Image 1 (cartoon, rainbow, N blue to C red):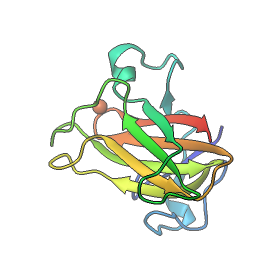
Image 2: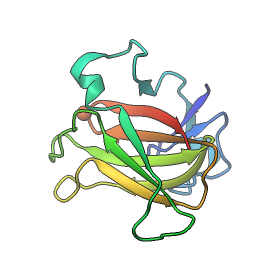
Image 3: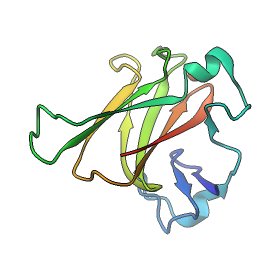
Length: 146
Ligand SMILES: [Fe+2]
């Protein structure tokens, strides 16, 4: 999988650099190809507790209490073992994609936020990808079929 990193805001694009970053608006020239950037479960790059605290854990919730009809909730927690949320070590953002096309970013501040985010999707088909960034341990990836 080809990975392109926005050097301005840390957004990851798959398969090609966009004309403009969908998060910060930076032009294509600000993207660099970084095919080994994303770590994921079981890929042998890290393992153990570090991996358990960073791989996004994706949960699908079919019954939404906010939007009762036609809504699929996606919950992402970092990670299976909860990541710290401290000024010196925290999750800076979680980016969401469907079929590797960017759909949303949640910025997280350690003073107030747990390392988690949720979306209310109109879509109920395709594959959801989540990319999170840890200020110390970098970019982590997981995906799940909707
Ligand atoms: Fe971390």
